[in-house]
Image (cartoon, rainbow over all chains, first blue to last red; front, side):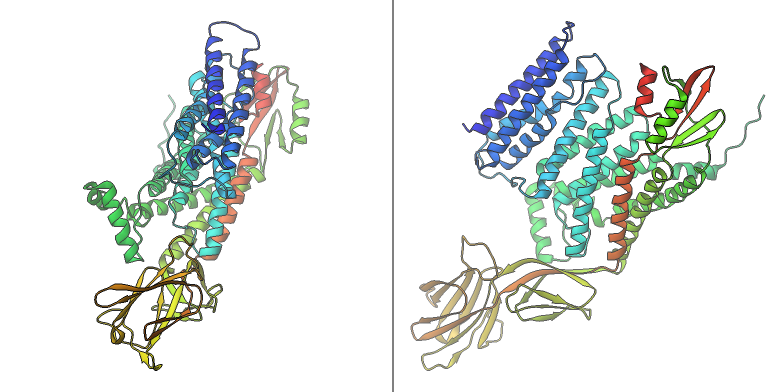
Length: 233
Length: 389
């Protein structure tokens, strides 16, 4: 068993503990519990990041999509500032997407590498798409939290993800135009990224619309962005 | 009883066409189309070989559903009428919104009618708030007893830029579609100059297949560099032997072939067949090693096998083979009359969107009523928090 898998497994356990602690705290008024959940989230993020770096260094047992998943989970795991809302779901919901990504990556690493498609995100573009995916995972957690506890979340995460995505898609289109004379390079990944960007544009524009619509759109486009980042090559 | 004013239908249409909702729907549908292109294979029209390969791949993947999917246009989404109609609708929507935003920019010079419910801002002193807003680069207009705070003009200029950029981008794409063309899979050997079919444009490759030159107005992109060979054969007396690539082709004394795939050449007078192929296990590049196999014909028995790099001379029995390396490039040539509008549109669009993200429209109104500060509109979070506290 590779060291990267061990770290990812530890992170999965830590995230499960964070979810359990948050749910346990719902029935008891334990002071400082949300801080403990946050600290565990940071620990999980650190474990995932170490696991991803070890896998990146040349652990061939970890496939490229699994590595992308671990990196996205590592970026999304450290929790944001504590919510003013006292509901336990406000602590649980942001962790759920990270937990799913971490577990999927753990199972994925158990698969044989043979026949696996995709390459590790070694290019600046590939890495930036993974960062976008990580921010998208965070935005997904925030949106789920909003649905669960009906309190609006901060807009900076959605805006930051959109700004980065805009820069990525825009720079790709400009490079294509300069090198190939066309906006469209013709690769499937570019189509997916442009689709995710347009969908995120709609969600960002929908920020002025009703809150439920905005949150629903954020959930859909964040999921789309994560799947695009996963398959981007 | 108040008389009801009849609603102007044109105003209703204008409001619908410039609404955020319509733009959201259009963007989502176009995004769905683009996302499908990422998951389903899209058929290239310019290259028949690539088209046939993709179609057979699709048939292997989707089986009987392939025909239905093809009829629905799922393999040619970007070229479908529906997708283009959506882009045209988007362009129309952006144009109307551009006009609306321009008007809004002009109207926003003065104090506007407060929008939204008035809320009490507990623990807030109006003069302190006004000073704080001015220090954070808000424009504060006063029309006693009302104060209007906003980020005019930049907060209104950036959306205007985003709309103008998006529109210019779509105009550029339209110009490309109407008058542009693209040649894919163009294979040129080193030192060769090719005139593109039905045009006066040309493309040339230097001796090393590294530098591509072309006539002005087109853009070339080298997809890959492949090895190539110029082959000639001579008998024991130095007399050139005739070569044939196919049974139907005219015999020649010299043949030049690109090794994009295996090549087979017959030397009928010497009863030999030559197979040329890129050496397996090596990256395909301009000067990759080439596997040369010579067969006796009949019975097809392998007589000689060697790997050559660069120029080489081989002797098989009485026959001498001369192989000269002639690298090739596979490239795409594009003529795009919409290049500059598209590029300018992209830059303006990105600047507008990033500016809008960093400098959002946030207009709100404040007033003091019986010693209490009240606010309406898009209040900043710090004021909203003090209201909630």
